[in-house]
Amino acid sequence: MGTTGQGQAGQDVDEVNVPPVRRRSAVRVLLAALRLTVVSAVTGGALAALVVAVIIKDVPVFLTGGGVLVVLILIGVVAGRRSPAGEEPPAGRIALARIEDLRATSGESADVPVKFRLTVAPDDRPAYRVKIEQHINLVDIPAYRPRGIAVVEYHPDEPWKVLIVTRPTAEWSRRAEEAEIDSAPESTLVVSPDMSEGSWCMLTLFAFLAGAALVVLLFRAELFTSGDGDAAAAKPPSSSSSSTSRTFSTSTTVSGPSASLLTFGRMRVTAMELEARVDTAYVTAITIEDHRMAVRGDSTRPVSETVHLQSLPYELFPGLVREARTTLGVSDPRSWRIDVTPGSGAGAGPRIRVTVTGKEGTAHLDADATGRVTDRRAVGESG
Image 1 (cartoon, rainbow, N blue to C red):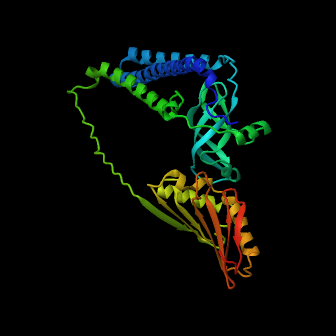
Image 2 (image 1 turned 30 degrees about the vertical axis):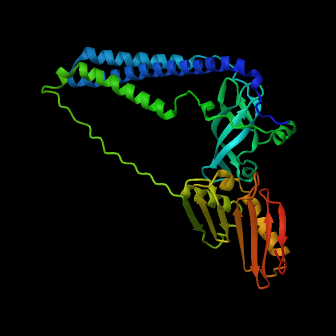
């Protein structure tokens, strides 16, 4: 029995509970932003008052600015010594999620940061969309494919905090294998209401400069003996260009004494580089040779007729090449090639063909998306 539409029984309760959670988070962010704005503006004004006082030789202004800074420092020290409220963090819950899409962003180490788009389907609330980024080991990446089911941990009070459980229990693994989850609409996408680190920095800088500018304006008569000069800020012209193409292809060649693509991890890293070049993970053909990898694609093809670059079991390909070179009757194979194309039929995975060539002729074997050999043609066999 699948989990399609699970959580509908708790929809009425959830629709009442989620808005207050988001409102509380928004109010908390608003109060923090207001507090930061006031402190930054006062700090900027106090520092500006010290500078202005030195320029115009005004002792009261100097003492006022210095006094405000001392008060701010004392408040910061007292606030830093206050014990935290000691509130327990919200407990996470386990649920199933449908992988809508994934993209690895780099490959410098064994753990690769991967961006996921998920449909999370809790047992007690409607399914919703979320975007996350999580580090996944290179060996485990083939287990996560578009339209696949994963076990996740989410926080009911903060549904945008989702973590993929890479080692679920046997019970949840069984549920994930049997589950079927429909995609939630894009309108259900949840995001964190918290401001980004860059937004906080910009707010601090703006409030600081605004406070300093206010003090300078108050003493502009003493500071400037001539009229105010206005400087017009030049806004550089902006230009944008866009281009679309129906078909694309690209390739890359690795070089060096030990630069074979059979080296562990090198195929996936090379696939990431090609994905970045074509700006999509969906292609119609992949060709891999000892020192070369190439991809082709067509932007008009539906997703079901393409191959997702990051979903292939690259870590199993060297073993397939080794099996093809030793079991198909080619005693001294001069070259090998892997061709990956979309499978035929609805729901069919990609077709992986490994071809080896030697003095006896050419032979090949076929495998599925899990690396399991499904067919083989030794030297001299027809087909």
